[in-house]
Image (cartoon, rainbow, N blue to C red):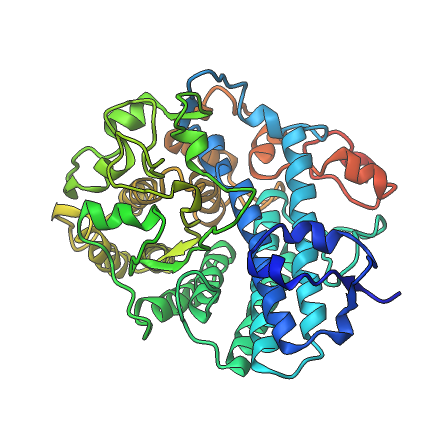
Length: 486
């Protein structure tokens, strides 16, 4: 059966809901994908980026929520955060799985539409599609481990089995190589943070390399961004740092930040943490509000605090809402960019990779280059113990990326890479349990000595609804009901 797309040029140009267009099969006025022109594919690529924005925002708050970086906002309360992902019937696991695979189809449709067109526009669209697909699978594998790999524009076949975790990571790496090749064929270079670029591909590849333990690759990919001809530069004051997150920003820190310009379905990150009506989901936990940006031995006068928390202890003002009480003005707050990658990613990825690769001295040099742009005074020694550097790194990651959905995944990655929790059958249980309770005190009441509980922290359950559709083809993760019935 031929595949069809509604192609309403004015709607795509306006970046209206591309989802409704792509979901309808063979509508009146549709054109087959084999009839698309180069210009059509370029416009379709813009529409697909609209869907990328949606998936980024949908998954945005989880890393902070699961790491207990948030208390309940005004008018809200929390249940046990991890309990919400610890059952195969969990609504959180189910909706995230469905959302990722739903959005995956847009990437696959774009790739299928562009593959037969030999033009720079089509090659650039291929690069966007491969990057989008790699990013979706990055979010899947960091939650579930190995997942079904769907590489064509079709609905998820119920009989598709899960790939191994190693094969899922390999698929991501392969897609990033394909993205690079497509951009090279198109002659694509960095032409603004609103667009997917070779630098954005490099940062995702560097992050993937960290997760896989390929530290040499992580360093080299991070360096591509740090030394890029695009001329990225770190901010050295609170106002410039804060302006990364406002509409119309010209920040030189941004590597990839979709501009979130739309006529409907606005993505307003501030509504969850800093809404204008006084009722919102998340507030900073008191310990972080009072102490996250406090002076420490290694750094004094961290200016990021003023741009993250305001006088109202219930609000995170990092995403200014356009009203009073904000650190910087944001007149059109509904169209603030969604910051996916920025230059700080490159420095922190590089430092972590250098340290885990065996050179804490080089890692301190890299980290100092970032910290000197963030503090009034920085004092770092020539070397540190591994435990001391890990504490410093985790603190810097928290300060830089608080409320950007990173924290739990940073903890999980270090649990795997430094503390030996590789799988349910290969980890040092004593060291892991002691460490996780130290870096994440809120979890002390949740983790017990039972093996299943520790495993559940690292991998979500495959939703039972998906397993039912597959007639058992989708294997369950260890530690969850149904695992022995795989």
